[in-house]
Every structure is written in structure tokens, then in C-alpha cells.
Image (cartoon, rainbow, N blue to C red; front, side, top):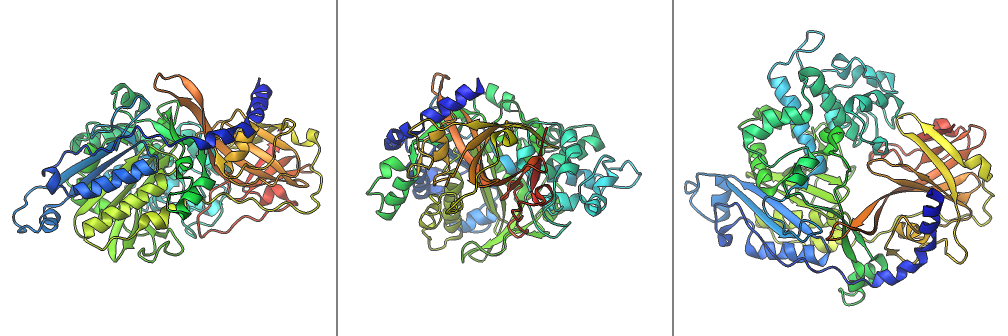
Length: 619
């Protein structure tokens, strides 16, 4: 059955060029559905002109729906409208909504529920902060503190690095400096306890506190810590101690509950997208090929086929613009959380970026589930979040008492677009001359992944019998490599940037790469169903060296909830080395997701197991 599906995947790839002419989907009417605000639209913090600009950007880039929650202090509101500082007594809580939430065309409103992904991390930090403030007693009789070592809470705690095992503390986990890179592809819905036990099998890419490296398993560990200390899961603890006291009535970790409310949004991925047309349209002011650029946004429903509660600490919160505005107020002026918890979370413990991305940005640091930087001289606290089809960003100006969330339901252009909109809102709030952030940021959205050029005389690959078979890696689990045949007449390079892709055609797979794969021999594929990757392809490069490509896909659903094709995203690329002598293969090229300043792994054909980021042994 699998080989028939793969053959089908292979047989339709060249046919996708006809889909590149798909006209962008445009049923998303320009709409701004404010709001829960103390002001009429003419006096909202987000002006009608700015809202129209936001919706125009959303529509232009094919993003189905977008929601904004904002909170402003009385002082900021008075200053913003040029009023006497004593005229305002209450905080302004404001929402603005745009476009549609789901495949049924339901409009986004202030009660539409979105996944905020990694913006959930601050709820885990806040929960630990409450336990610290309440003087929680440890199993050894001590008192919980920010610098409490994890081994003193969890007897089963162990990392591959013995020194880190002994010394990693709560701040190290929250500020992501344990030495472990992301290793996101291990995630498959295991319990937090299982994730913690599997950490010992994951290779570090740095020593303890040497580099900042994003790591979701750290926050899954926090969930397990809360359960160990309180006998409550993070979702249960946060509900009792944060959601309920703050009146976050529509906030939940339970995706099923959100769906049953009738307000949960869908995730979307574009199909029929043509990156060459995007580049041409951009260079010629949208006069050439722009109608072919963004394609259509297809819905796949929700990103996980369960409630994703095991990933609650890392990114499980589902909420609304209404609740986000309340949460922003709490972060800017704490009433339920102790102020020192927010202060600790927004203290820099690690350097996140080696250099500013733009002249207007300062060096970005990382606290506890929060980043810090300066924007045009003003202090910013915030975070971003991403799960398939749901993205978010929050930016707060603590010195002047205002902040906002942007959440949208688009996988493709959404991440870049939320940065554009975020910066345009900052310019407006700060009263600064606007910068053309769309030009700066979106022009980078068309850059393809790059594979190395094939050698002039590539060596033959290992035999099929050496490569095919079942492989295993602790924590990563099992996968089985099988050879994939390219039907006669099909191409082994990607067709000029076209990105309509489906897991039912090899041509469509090749087009996910957005650039020629530079294949010099056979292709192998493994089904590897995890949270963020479903299949991994090995395309021959030179001798035992292959390029690997990881993809995630889901069924495309129409308005009648029927499957109407597939939606696929390219997750990562890199190098694989097949070792016949060591009986396995090693993955290189940031399969583990190292931090920006951490050292790269070095591809080696000798001692592959020791050199690789992740090693799969043949069974």
C-alpha cells in the first residue's frame, strides 16, 4: 500500500505547473471587527487607517484570518490622544479582527480561538513563579527557587552531558541554555514524563550555559515538574491559578473543548504558490505574475489530531483576542502574578541573536520564556509562536505601558507578515516616522532552500540492500527507508519555484524544496509520523552522502469537511551519511536545530555515529 501511494506521489509531480496559475483566494473581505474597547473606532488606539492597512496586507498576502488584542495603560491612552494625564482612569483593552477563521467562512471576531504556540511558554514560567512565591517544598525538604537544580526535583533527570545533568537549574531550562538544541522531531505526543526520560538520549551541541538554543523539551519538563510538585498538570494548575483569577474565560489547553465551542480557527497552508512569480511580482511592483504568487490558502483543520496536551508547556494555549488583551494588562501591571515573577521573566539570561537583524533593532536577549531587545531606542518584551497553520507574536513596551498580540492562521507568509504588522503598529504607537517594513521583511520570504552542487563525477551510492530497512534511534523512534522510483519522463529537479505540493506525487515533493535538489542517483523515503514531520526523503548526492528533506503534510479540507487534496510544508533540509561499516546513518545540517551561535556539526564519512547530530542504527 505504501509503495502504491509513493508511486502515486511520484506520478503527478510534473502536472503541478498548471496549478501555478491559480488566482489568489479572495473571499476574505476587508473587515475590521472591533472590538472590546473603551473608545469608539475613531478613538481606538489602533486607528481606522492602521486597521485598513493591516487588512490590506493580510489580503494581499493571502492570509485567511488575523486577530489583535491590545492593552494600554491610562497614562499611555491619555498621552496617545493628547488628553490631560488625569482624564483617564481605566486601562484600555482593545481588539481588532480581520478575515475568516475557518474553511466554512466564519469571520474572525474577538471570541475566535487561535493557538498561540510558544507564547504559551510564559504561562509555564508564571506557574513555576507562583510555586516559588508560595514557598513550595521540594522532595528533599528544601524550598523551590529559581536556581533549584532539576535533579533535586526529578530523580529521573539525566542528560547525555554528565556535568549538565548535575547542574542544570530552572533558569537554565527557561532561558534555554542547557546545551541541548531543539530536537523537535522527537515529539510524537508522548507524556511529559516520557519526554524527560528520553532527554538522556539526545546529543548536546554545546556545553551548559555556553549558547542560547531554543528547546521545547525544556518547557515540557516544566509541565512534569509542576505535576511532580503539585499533583496537577500545567493545564490544571494554570486554570486554577491564572486563567480563572484573570477571567480568561475562553482560554484553554484543550483543542477538543475549543472545537466544541464553535469558535476555534483552522490552520492554513498555501497551495498553487509560485515563488518565481512572487519574485517577479515583487521586482516589478506586482505588475508581473503577482496573481500567480500566493496561490490559495487551504485549510487542514487543527495541527494535531489530539489535544496536544503533552506539549502544553511548550505551546498548548488556545485563546482569543479578548482574553489576550486581559493577559497583556496583567503582564504590564500584575495583579494576580507577583510583580517579581514578571521582572524575572523579562531579565536577560542569554544572548539570542549574534547581531541585530536591522539597524533599528538592538541585540536580542532571552529571559524566561520572553525575549528582550530595543526597537528604535525603545525597550521591547515579547515572544513569537508557531505550530502548523497558527502563528503569533506579542510585543510590549513596558516603559510606556502598552502592548499587543497578533495571531493569524497562515503557515506560509504569516510569520513574515506578523513581523511587518508588528513593526508598523510599533511605529504608530510610538509616533515615529513609518518605515517600509513590508519591503524589508517580505522580500526575504521568497528565498529558496539551498542544496550543494553535485560533484562533476559523483561516486556511486551504497547498494539498495545496504540502505533499505528499518532503523532506530533512542528518543527518535523507528523509521523504514524504502526506495522510491521516479516514473519515466519525470524530472529530478524542482520546476522553477512552483510550490503546489502533495504527498501523492514525487514531482510535487521535489517542488517543496523550491530549488533543484541536485540529485545524482536514487531516492529513498521514510514515513516518520511526528508532530512536525511526516516523511523524510533521502536524495543521492555523492557516494554514501545524501541530501535529506523533511516534510509535514495534512489533508486539505473543503467547506463540506471533505478531503480535497493535500497540504505540505518543507520543514528542514540537510545531509545524511549512510555508513555500511557502522550499520546505520547519521544526520547533519541542523536536524537537531542548534542555536545561532552554537558550533555547526561537521559532515564526516568516518566515525559517522560519533560525528552526526542524530544517529539511526539499522535493525
